[in-house]
Image 1 (cartoon, protein in one colour):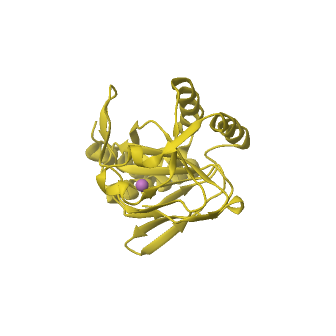
Image 2: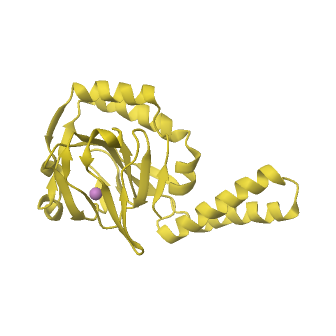
Length: 225
Ligand code: NI
């Protein structure tokens, strides 16, 4: 499931992030690419100092922590350290799937189930730079407002179209979900929507209780820790 999550970051948070990033160094994105990605990756990534990492992580994680849509769609178990990527004119990232295992170097290793892009610049400020995700229903182009995010299965083939004007700036995260199968996550997300609605509209109804218990017990049946 490919899902847009509007308003993950508010204008004040975006401004703070821009301020931190304006003082940071960016290095060639090939340095963090695997062998297959290296051939198609032409972008830059922020070289983070521990203080900057800590601050950026806190801003974005506290915001995601309160986001119901993120939680119900992604069912996050572990979230990787964020990466900040910059694309200037001529830069692009060709078709690839994301690395299956991340972490290590002192931290825990985890499986990547969900990829997330948080857009940090408004779409009018640059040309190109669409995130293009291949789905079974064709390619989906995603270019969202600053502060909005998109989540999609890490197994999807995707690319970033070449930027021809301005600068594309994004935050990237990879998440291990409690539920690894994208189809099961999608089903749980829809059942969660129904459950929330029923719990508000008809809390005492017997059928609300059936839906509520089905959601909770399906999540228990399918989740891995
Ligand atoms: Ni990718």
